[in-house]
Length: 388
Picture 1 (tube, one colour):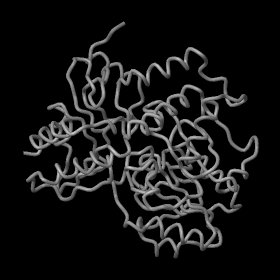
Picture 2: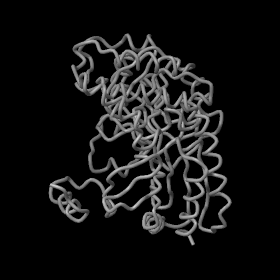
Picture 3: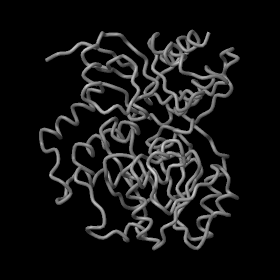
C-alpha cells in the first residue's frame, strides 16, 4: 500500500516511539547532495544523514556493489571467517597505523567495546572524559558522554567516569589518579557544536597519557573517514592513539561500527569476552570497503578540505549581524548565532535547504564530501535569504 505524506506522518505518530522531533516532510529518495521528498520537492542536503553519507545519495556503483554481496550472502555471523571483513580490517589497520579491529553496528557500540577493552587491559575502571562530549546513548557510552541534559533522567550512570574541561591539558593532568585507565576524547567536539581545541591539544594529551601510562581513546565517530581532510582527524596532530572508535560515514549510510587498537591492547580480549551478532557482516563490510576505496580514488579527503575552506569563506562573507562565529575543519562546520536558530532552520527547509542544529544557537553543516562550489553557492543564497 502506497501512502501520501499525511498518511505516513499519521502512521508514524501511531506506531513509532516518539524520540525524534521531525519536520513535516517525508524523504523519499536522493541523488548526490540532493534529497527529494514524497511530493517531489528537491532539497540541498547539508546534513548528509548526520555525517553518514560521505559519497552522497543514490550512488549507483555503491548500490551495485552492495547488491552483489546481498545476492551472495548477508550474514553468516562471526562464528565463521568472511572475506570482506578481513579486507576491511586490513584497510583500517593500515589507515590508522594500528593493528586490529573489532566490528559492531554503530558509534555507540564501538565506544562500548572500547570501554570494556580498556577495563580488561588496564585492570582499572576509571576513564576520564570531557564536558559537553558525546559518545553515545547506551549506558556505558552515555556515562562517558559529558552532556548532563541527556543523562539526567537515566541515572544512576555506570560508575567510573570523570569529566574535565575540553581542550584543557592541565585539567587532564590534575584528574589522573592511580585508578585511571584511559582518557577518551573527540578530536573536534561534534554534538557540542563543532568545538575546536588548540592545534597542539592532542599532541600534549598524547604526551600526558604516555607519562602516566594510561590509554588514549580517540572518538572519530563523527570526524573520521576523511571529513576533516585526513582519514582520521587525529592525523592532523601526527599522533597515534591506543584505541580509535569509528562509525557513521564509514559505509556511506549502512550501519557499521569499528573499534581499532594496537596488538598489545587487542590481546587482552579473549574469545567470549565480547561479541556482536551483526557486527562485521559481509554487506556492511562490502559497503565500507567500497566507501574507503571511493574516498581515496576520488581524492575526497582533499576535496573536503578545499570545499570546507570555500564554504567557511562564503558564510563568513555574509553581512549578517546575528552570526557570532563560523568555525570548523574540512566539511565539519558550525555557524554560531547570537539568537535562537529554530526559525532559521524552518525557513531554510521551506526554501529547499536542509541544515541541522546542535543547540539553540548553533547550526551544524556535515554535507557529503562530494559537494561542489555550485551547490555551496546555491546553499549560501538560500541561507542568506533565510537570515535576512
